[in-house]
Length: 59
Image 1 (cartoon, rainbow, N blue to C red):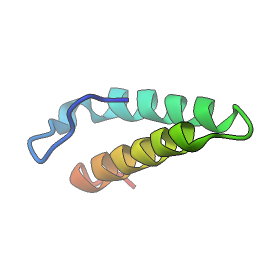
Image 2 (image 1 turned 180 degrees about the vertical axis):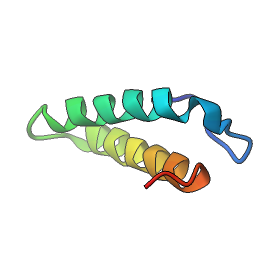
Image 3 (image 1 turned 30 degrees about the horizontal axis):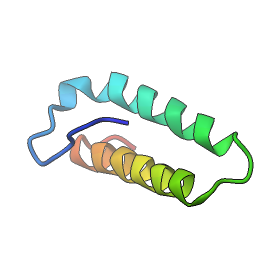
Image 4 (image 1 turned 135 degrees about the vertical axis):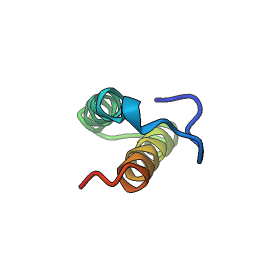
């Protein structure tokens, strides 16, 4: 999970960042039944991925 994603995010890093975030998300989803903490991490990762895709105009 990236530490600080905000409106000043540098899209030149988006390829690497998205790859890392998607891998983390798939790993968490693959753990089976998730507790509240894992669900919060999944939600945060999904939000970070959506933010980067929207900010950097990536489909």
